[in-house]
Image 1 (spheres, each protein chain N blue to C red):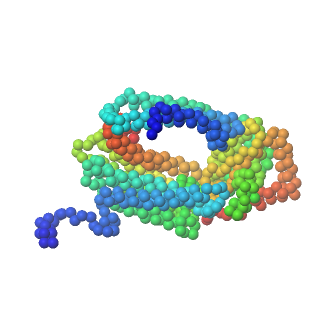
Image 2: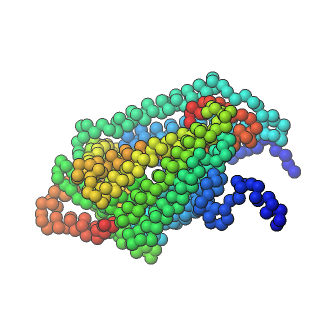
Image 3: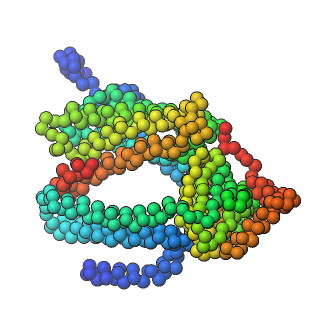
Length: 293
Length: 292
């Protein structure tokens, strides 16, 4: 039987661990918290990573000492239990260190939290109203407003269940009929409220999540840096179809946004196309099944 | 045979031993029997709650809807949480407290043995009432374990059953806590001052006080939900001048201490087991007590 020295085993495991990242890093971005596309989401990501590494150091330190003690002082090696049991110095040290660490992580967290709350000087205000089970968006500056509901094909597929080939959908259950369209590089203020029960409008790429409470208005803001489609969900249990009221935000250039807004105005101005616009939003709404009651 | 007859008539007060069969468990005032009942109840509820978790995970195995209706899914998540918190973790620790505290402090039994019996036997009825709603037409509660209004007020009449079940669970917990506090303060061996009590006893003393302080607040909150739903009050209805967020504040006045209620006895267990098997005294007993 081959006998390994403990040091050799540790070194071998260490070598293997250094090889692991190459394979693991491939899926890392999927696994880790998103960095998002706004300054705030970047800040949130950095705080997350900083606290993650602080936790790693604490974890390795604490479990290292613990496992080493258990291994080194085992009974079969003739270890005799020590009988010391009080030390004020040690108590003070291991109270002060966590306190210092908490203050250390609280400062950047508080800075970001304060930044998140500062909705002043917004150039565009959008009111988001949660309904069971859809979102209503209203551009308060221009009066454009519409409902955003789970895309009809996705809704049909989930109602039919297992008989549908789901691979045809790229973003199954994360697609809506009318996405929220917003410009990039502009400070947007969102006002959140709800019509029936509490919802929560959540888009992780924008680091936005706010409860929508009936009778009350909450607010938050964002400046999106990159054009793209960002997906989110309702994050507060709101009844039967809580899982089926996705959020889709399409961030476009400021010119594209202006022309989109123009188009929406034209649509609402002519009665015929208004019909067209409203059918997409109301026909796709599934029959209102009131939960119970 | 003849020897028993002779032995009997000079001792009128001798111990007849426990009653036989069901009566033993129904009418017991023995702290170990009641502790055993609590632990069995907890184990059974663990399988009930665990089965609900299996349904939840089976449904989430793939995106979309496969196995259960969303309403039933929501009622599984809601019931799973309530069963696991009130039916598994809390009774498990009350069971351990019943078994261990009298023995750890040198008491012959709990201070209030009949109340001990009562506080256990309320629980099966409370849970029968709550779990029974699953078999009604309107289904079980589906408003989430935090019972946030207005959503929770949309449910069927299972809501009223859940509120009463929570009241019963609360009464059971508060009675159990009063019993533990009374036992610890009045029935310690004469040579055991507070600062010599085993750490498990200390953690349970603090837990019992947390329960006595927070459970009535929770009971008040669900009662306000009940009157909002059935008696036309508007505590949590913005349209009537109330505030849905106020429920969240009141709920978490209970909910936050509740996490300590669930973890403190476990800390106590760890603080007994490790010193025992490491064969050395607990490091920093006094600081541990103050930290508790």
